[in-house]
Length: 168
Image (cartoon, rainbow, N blue to C red; front, side):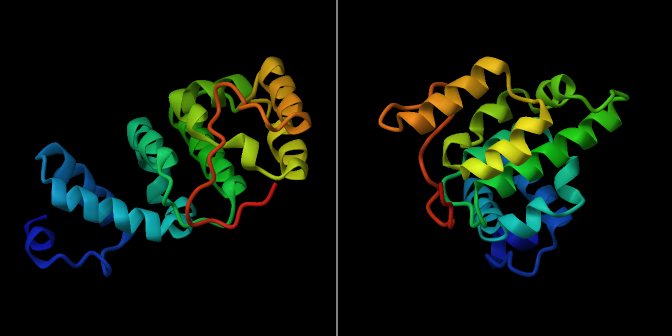
């Protein structure tokens, strides 16, 4: 950690070590290093979401990541896929069957950081609905939202991420 405090260079840091440095910087309140780690996570979001180390992060960090507006991604559906993969891994680690209810339980508050309203409607219907994570009321609210987009969708954020190519 000291090396990164003094060098300012996190570009060469692999993901497992990036998460470790982040956790340590957060624990010891090294704000500058925390911010540099978060910037790297933003820039490397797609790589991060597809990595094995991502599956081992805690729910708090998952929430922090999903809340970020600056994630460089190929669309919000990629965030959903990563979150679902993370939840499936948490189910396995906790000896739980992979069901919609258990996935929802594992995601906890992270579920409400996903920007479902900006996911393309076809992806929502073919990828998210079959996962059985959302409640019937949440599904109805989504379909109401796409019919009347002038209204904010309760519970789920509707703001586009800054650096993504999301299309609805």
